[in-house]
Image (cartoon, rainbow, N blue to C red; front, top):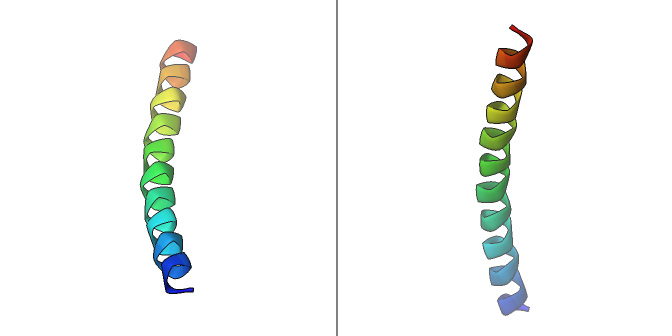
Length: 38
């Protein structure tokens, strides 16, 4: 049970890190599209 909780927290940390990277990537793509429109 404790192991599962630990892995859950580790997974949530990884998820937060990946979501941050996804946000950066989305912003990069949006800026690229915006520049193409201008």
